[in-house]
Image (cartoon, rainbow, N blue to C red; front, side, top):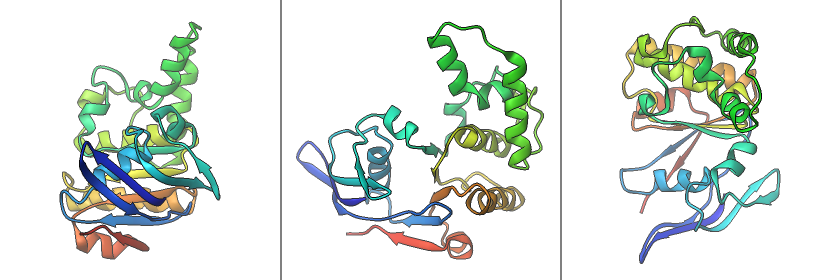
Length: 215
């Protein structure tokens, strides 16, 4: 990201923001509330199209003007409010494979439910997540729901995964499980994980690179 600027009307929120993330890296972005962290990532996710500056992928400029482009480039996010992004009456498998289900519905083709369940089961196995793919999401704990969202994000071709305050609602034991999964994602899946948090002790413990937004 090079010299990114964004304004809400006459109020400029982002002033020449630059940072970089490499695949396989665990990067943290820190800064006080109101500094523009959420706005920055809304731009990167294609949710705010009116930015100026450049976003480059492998040295080539990309235009992230809508969410579908960001998703095709493998840029995903897991928000802190996990219940907003899940379908509680659907199974774990259906939630993990939701993108494929929606695509199938758009093309009006029959859904292969055996494939949906087996693909979800394979993703959970690959990520060492011990959750029954046939269980309803509404029956899961908050920590388990978060893992399901991460599994959905990396089920396809995820290159950059943004975690927005992921440990805020978690216990110490649940946080350790999350960090073990992140370690797997960076080292084995070669995903860049961008960690937004106010818990400095955790950041200093696990992140290899830290970028600070201020002033």
